[in-house]
Image 1 (cartoon, rainbow, N blue to C red):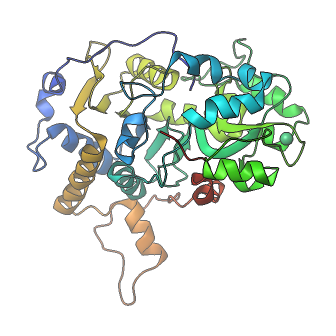
Image 2: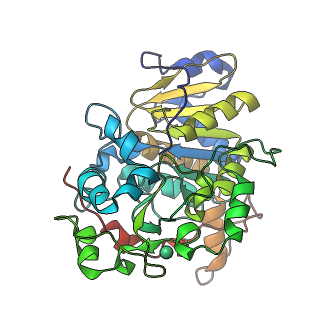
Image 3: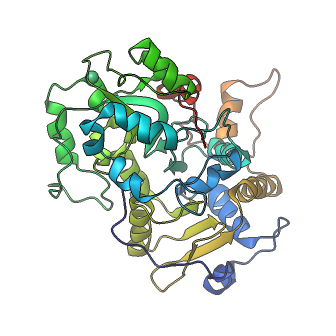
Length: 392
Ligand SMILES: [Zn+2]
């Protein structure tokens, strides 16, 4: 939720056919009618490129989750001043009742949509080369160890420290990295202190919140709370597990900033899905793409990117719940045409071969070691998803 310092060059009127200008030699007619998707499918399943997907609010609109921005967004001037540690510490009870609960809860029975599901299936097929970073806190992406929820997850909680040791703006002291999302030095220093486990390392689900009557309100989203939720370990007030504007990615292990930096640094293609490019993460990713000449795709209904000499941008215009299932179909079609068994599927065949069958000889990948499996850290997801309901 960190704000941007400046906006990249984007145009709402740019044509989605920029890619025709950029890469005419790569055109291939696609049965799905969009050669950009077929090119991306080739990158994923034929060339096995490391593709990083960065998703934003647009992917959850079809699930009924209000975006922060746009005409129906909840992004107002009040969010900039309220979604901070400072505001929380002044009066945690008022903060929950006046700001968080009315604005940042999820709709009743919110569920993943076709975009989340299709992206998850793509991820499962190529688990060693694909990864997803979401800016969304709605918890709608299916669990995977190739997914990072960079801004937290509604329904989980963290312990709020009494004072900050990790949010000042000093430069990092080890800046050999291609991408900087957090401060390693501050992280190390913070970890030396004997802080409560839930301040920096672990998250709590709603059922661990004290006292019970507060837990019930947070779980149903109805009514208001009579006192702030309390940490069962140290009795401090609990804040939602969401990255506040005056916090850094290094402030809590949940945000996995070093893994995000690694994924960005190694990415050969970056695909933005439903993001407005107006917050820090996509801004940094775009700047990295420019600096390292990494091709980017932009699945979006608005906020088209301008292709420039420095930025190889391909806009694919449309809602993500249509585009991502089409990408999955493109990939499956290519696999069938070329006889490719995706590594995620091949690994499953190896794990549990059906009686009397052997893995097909056309198996193209033998290097699979890290098959995506439901992350244990997400074990509390189903209950946490029910945690906060909204009046939207
Ligand atoms: Zn605590």
